[in-house]
Image (cartoon, rainbow, N blue to C red; front, side):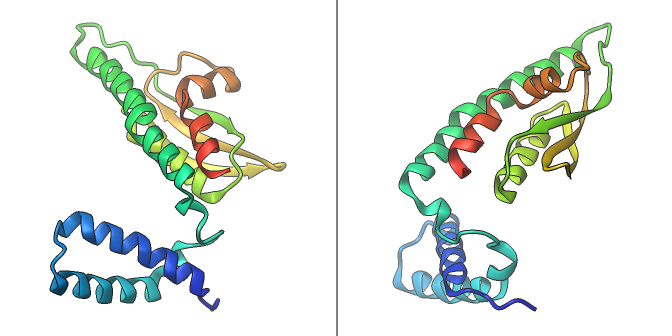
Length: 173
């Protein structure tokens, strides 16, 4: 069993405590102490599973602002476009679907970046990331797509990933 690094515990504690504050919306001394104790326990238990790379990588203010921009502007824009597309398909008389599995290349190297892209793809309607594989030092996503309109990997990847991969690279790498 691997030993938990103190920096991983601190980074996990900060994340958990920030989430605690968002959930409770309370700054009373009792809630702050209780939250600190609960979050410290959670951090001690889960840090070795949660933090695999640089502990404070995401706490850079520039990365935080890039992540917020990604989530509020880029991802939400892709989410609205995908919802609109699926709604049109569901409400049309002639359902136009051509489902299939596409092997999409990616340039992301960090685990967190790969997971964020996989989750972003899956959260947009019409696509589900089924697997992430490394082949010959390259990363590929197997994505089930509601309408395979492009069979070329590069073009299909651009259609599925949109601007998301570029912004995730700016955040994590």
